[in-house]
Length: 345
Image (tube, rainbow, N blue to C red; front, side, top):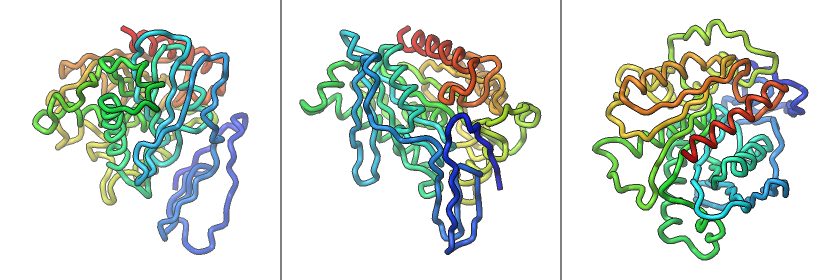
């Protein structure tokens, strides 16, 4: 079973609960426990916070229900200091498909700052988690969220005008970090699949780009960065935890060469068969995913796709939300500038 140690400076809560009724079958220490009877325990890794935003940012935030039957919801961020129509970013949080929430303090802070700095409206999607809801549940929720935005653009009520009136629906981006970047990519490929999606499916929305921050991909064969990268203390993603996340989130019986994990595995749809918008891929130098992210960019470029690659030196996975060093804070400022330029190009 995988173990992961998190930096105590992050004030993460890793309380343990005795489970009397069933044997423990999988665990990422301090993160998640899965029992034989199917029950799941998630530790309170980071606090959940309300939609209230620091007044200095001049951003309005509210929570909205997308699908009450699956408890799918989103947190909206709208800059109030900007005038005119703004780009719209649909964002998916990370967490190995198994943990995380758009209400986690780290995502709330990151996205409220991004909305302010990049002058964009953000729809941050709280999708269903594995292992209770294995893939493709998160992809279905991502697609449903985009279709919900489309319906709001077409038939939004007066109650939604506070954010709809600010959106430029011809400038829509799909974005996410780690597992959320995987979701953004898979939703984009679904929208751009030849023969299965009508090009007009998004109207009046126009998908202008995807932003993949440390995208969570894998495979059975190890890359050099997976084998060799020395992780700093408190790393957000280790190789054992990565393996466990995939084991808990992929369909039962699938291995890491399933195309949802390894988009270039044998039998996966060829990249060239998708209509994909320009993409920006953010890569961390100290991330075990570095080589997979670089291979992804190379494969996309070889297939004729527009790829902007940015490498952040000296930092690891999820540095932009954990802020556990002065260097990570500097790199986060750099990332914000890069995202702003890509969104507003």
